[in-house]
Each structure stands twice: as C-alpha cells, then as structure tokens.
Image (cartoon, rainbow over all chains, first blue to last red; front, side, top):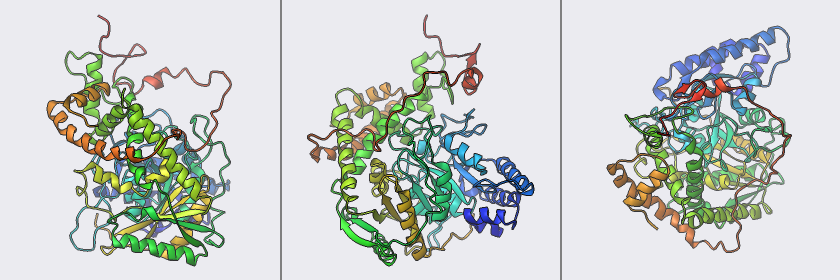
Length: 494
Length: 95
C-alpha cells in the first residue's frame, strides 16, 4: 500500500496542489486498494473509470494553471443509497437490482462538481435498515477490524453505512458519503475507529437519495478525522429547491472555523444515557471524554433528558411508518425487479414483486409501519409517537438553554460479531439507543474515535449540538480527537 | 395490543406483500415482540402535547407556476421492467 492511501483528504488535497503527486496516482492507488479488498464486500459496484476521469481533469487543470476545485484530486466512496447517473443504485436490495438512475443525487452532483471522483458504490443495510450491515441483499460487509484474542471472528462494521465505514478504516477510500436516519453514520463510524457527522436535518438535500424515513433521513460525511468531515460537509450541504425540507441558509466555512479551544463552552452529560448494564469500558471511555473536554477548557455539567428511554420505541413507530409509505413506490411497474407469476393480475404482481424483492428486515418494518398507520391504530401508535417525539425535542431544547453541547458514548458496545444479534430485532435496535434521540430532534451530531476496548476494538464518543451548530460539534470533536490521539488501525488480513 | 395470524395476513395484504402460511406463523411472535416493546410509550403523559411532524422549523416555499421539467419520456421509461409504445406495461386490468 502506497503512502498516498495513508493521507487524509486534506493531505491529498494539499499534496496534490503542492505537486507532490498527480491526481491519477491517487486514484490509481485507491482503485487498486478497492480491487484488492473484495473479501470485505464493502463495494457493490467498482467504478475505477469514474475516479480516473475526475483525476485526469484535475491533473489537466493543474497543468494548465487553472484554479483548482475544493475536492480536486480526491477520490471518494459513495453509499449505494445515493442515485448516481449511469451507475447501478440498489440500496442493497434485490428489488432495485439493475436500476441505473438517469439522474444524479444533489449531494453526489455537488461532490463531483467540486472535483471529487468516485471509486465505487458502497454496500449498506438494505434500504438503510439495520445496524450491522447484515440485511444487505448482496451479503454482509466484514469489518477490517478483528479482536485481539486471535479468534478471527468476522465483526460487524456497523450499519447502515457499513460499506462506508469499512472502506475508510481499511484505507480503500479517504472518505465516503453516509446517511443517518437513527445513527447510520455515527454507529458505524464508532465501530471502525473513524469520524462521521450527521448535520442538522435539512442541511443536505435528500433529493436523489433512496428514501427510508423522510423526517429523519440526513446525509453526511464519513472520514478518518474531523477536518476531513468538515471539508466534505462544506461541499455536501446547501440549499436545494427540489427538497421541500432543504434549509435555505448559507453554508458556513466549517474547515476554516475549526478550533479545539473549548474555553467558555459548557458541555452537558445527560444522566439518562447511563443505561442499565452499560459495559464498564463504555463508562470509562465516557469519563475519558469528559476529562478531554475539561482539558480543552470546557465546563462540564450533568444534565437531564427525561424522555430518553422513550426515544427508541418512538423511532420504531415513526421510522417504519414513514418507510411503509416511502417503499410503496416499489411496485414492479416503473423501475426495478418485477415478479409476474403465470396468470397473475396486477394486484398479484405487486404482491409477488414485493415478496421477492424485499428482505426480511425490510418486510418486518413495512408491516410494522402499515400496522401503526392502519385504521383504528393510527392515534394509539403514530400520533402518540409524534407527541413523544415533541417531548424528546423539548428535552433537548431545554437543556440547550444551559449547555452548548452534549457528550455521550456513540454506541453501547464495541463492534459485535456478525450473526451475534441478528436473531433478535429488538436487541439489534438497542444499538442505536444513544444515536436515535438526536435524530428524532433533527440535531447535528458526530462520532469521533475515543480509544480501544480490551479486545483492541475502537469505541466512539458522540457530540450533539444545537440546531445548525455543526461548528460547535466539529470543534468539540476536534478537541477530543487531539487528546485521544487515536492512531490505531486494523492490520491487513483481507 | 397484539396481532394474530389473521391480522398479519391483513397487514401484508394492505402492504401488497405476498406471504406464505409459514411466513405468517413466523411473523406473529416477531411482530408481537416489537409491538410489545413499543407499547411502553403508553406510560408517557402526552396530554396537551401537539404531535411533532417537522423537527427543524422551515417554511414551505412557493415557486412560480411554470413548467420546470418534462420531455423526458425515454428517461422515465428507461428502468421500466416492461415498456411498450412509450408506456409502462402491466398485466391486463380491464377485461
């Protein structure tokens, strides 16, 4: 592996500008790493030609003395939930197998317009429904990390952005897009020792992203450090008239605004996040994070978010309800797979197509969603959940009158082995216990690596900020990153 | 509240997902497990609380009432499992 693959996005960008290497060399390095890591199953489609074309444009621009774009020379991985013109987009489902969009998602259009190239489309949980990348129709992504017990158990890279997290941790890409509905950027980032930020709901356009739960879905960057997340987010964010929930606000210069000085900031520690049965190592990591924040000058106080324990059940009403509605579009008529048994009528074709095209977790969520929205149950479940969601949002609002940020662990454990939790949906859902509340409230939140557990696996710390205060979140993330000094990386076995 | 096999069949039919008897049998305890778990929301006092639909305040915008898109028939049909004569084709609906 060449040294280029060890560079951050900032390092690639700046090194390319300084003439240390060509963009083609960078693209070729990452293309080769992708091709050499198929055992991880992180990519569904490899697109080396896309990365090379972007690189050649960058090299030509540099040779011609033209002004370079913000991401000139930077290759990225794209989660296969983003529609990419001319490249298959499946959401890791069978029903969308063979779907080749004729249009580009807003976020990928912005990234490519800023000079970035794409090395491939990244595997994920089917329709982004999962926390371990085990629901993909195209097989599990395997984390590049292994426990240090010599057992070589295949571990989950987290989910749903598991291809993104695995590819970044394995140095197959310097950065990638993710999407986060209940933790799908932050939990995989924590499991693989990388960083990822879910911005405020509305910062990144959802146009061209395969919809899961529209009031929660939000795109964001995943990369090896906080600066790289800031760089990517600056390009990904921005107003889009095609998304009714897109925020018409200027995009701050987050990279230029980075500062690890937390003097004058107050950070809250929500006591309800100390859940029963929390592993001692997670507690210890949290205490370490608190010490880092204090060392950076922040005042740290305990706060209360009384409705925290209701966030997950609220989420598991609202997200499936929205999913059941969003996924109604897969009917075997307009795109994707069609299943037409002999003599079937239109209704039977719909039912057969959807039975064959959706995986078990997707069906489970569609059925739950259909049930909670059905006549007679709508108020008891869906309206009730929307009311509790209001209380959860109010908890945050009240706390943010006293503190600037919240600090919590990202996940209740380190990465678990593939298959360990897949038999019990509720046990799997509990993985998102710390990430779901911020999603329900639409708040910016990020995960940064905090250290390793006794098995040598990464653990993440989460920062949650006020609406639109991505800068505060990034800055506190940077302060922790600098003090955690996380340099561990998986040994290559793949 | 809990679901039985009949309810699962009804939901699956509303959701247009074909299910076998064996699948229904497997789904009953699975869905009841999840529904039993979300049931705990009943403990929360939500009297007088307005349901939250939009988390970040935003104004729905109006735009000029002009055509912004169109003439894209071939692009629209490009991914259709079956397209004929410029239309989506489906099994016969009217006898």
